[in-house]
Amino acid sequence: MRERFLRNKQIVMHYYIATAIIILLFMFASRGTPLLDREITLILMGYLLFFPIVILYTRKYAVHIFLFVLALITGFYSFYHYAVEEHSILNALYFTFQLYLLTLTDVFTEDGSALLQYPLIVEIARWSAALYTISTVFIAMYRLLEMSIILTFYQVFGKHIVVFGYNDRTLGYVEHLRKKKERVVLIAEQVPSEAVDYLEGLKIVVLNLREDSSEVYTKAALTRAKALMLMYEADMDNLNTYIEIYDYFKMKNVHREQLTVSIQLQSYTSAKLLQDVAHLKKKEEPYFTIRFMNPYERLVENMFERYPISMAQLSGEKAYVFIIGFAELGQQIARQILVNQQQTDDQSLTIKIVDPHMSRAKKAWDNSYGKEFPQAQLAFQQFDVMQESLENLIQQAEKDITHIYACLPEEHLDLWAVIELSNQFPHIPIYMSFSKDGIAAKWIQSEVSGDRLIYRISTYEDLLEDGCE
Image: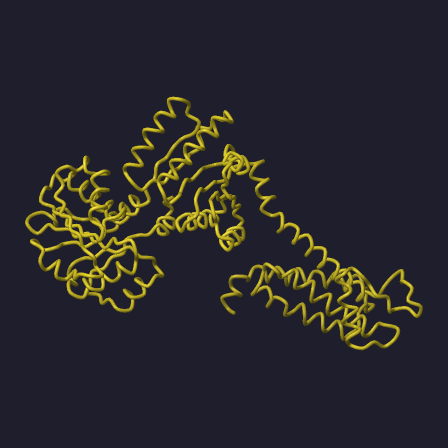
């Protein structure tokens, strides 16, 4: 309760100030003549005094609740005490609920004729009920058309960010953009209805990418956007989307060199293909600026900034880096280590790599970075952490291992490997990628002693929090 009050302290204070002003104006207008019975005055004073409790728990619906309860209290009191004939509690309640339908049952005259002026308590009841009903209808209409209204606003004024693709990474990114109060449109295929509801709750316009992409691009006002982010999981989807966007700008004959189209590509081959295609397109007509981004490259650069590998430490006979898992993250770690090695001209470093699908991983490495590091001392080995012992593998190594990087695609497999290795080799620094609130973080906080050297590789969410987009 105290934390809620501190978060809403300013709103509560404004509420009490506004209420006090209204009461003073009401007292001044009455000029000493009581316009309300003593009983209802005390009830309303108590209601106004304790209503901020509702504000503490729901600011979004506070006004609606205020009007609804105010109409209920004053309406019931009016029909029960001011009616010409005595009515039961059920009748009084029924007449009160009719107020929300903008209907007033006149029980305040002998013949049922309408009065030119009703008692103040009745006026408060009927106008509170009317305001509640009318505002509810308008809010329902707005929510029904809210996304269309927001999209129309973007189409007219622009300056929004269009994100392509729906996955965990894009979800985190659009949430980050909304925290920064950016205008966001998400274009994707087959977004679950629950996700659409959640995103629209964040005021993110979700457009379903159908076969006619140009129609969707027009609706998303691509030519008026502030930035475009291509973040599909598959590189080829991002490349195809880039070509479609280029053709769309060409068809519209819109030149916006200040518009940046950021394309997420995970493999070196895809990046090289993008460079070739972009070069050809630029020769044809430069409609916008292209920016290439590799999320794993950023994660690794961030990690080595926090935990740099000292090449002096890794020089000599004992230089040995052990990488478990050789997908995109593992390959980027190996590449960054080799780049550091070239800069220091240290040729003694050896990298041992194990992966359950080594032939495929090695082929991907050769295609992406083989020409960049032809003399690299890399030792590849097929290995399944669920079936074989990492402890035996490290003990059989020809050199003492100095660094271990767990880069398997699934967090529970990384955690399995780290648990085994940290128990047997607490003196070797181990690096693992895991979320701050995941099972790995909880295990490390509860089980790992200060003697073990376990370090966390940043995740994409960390980059967003650090302002790296």
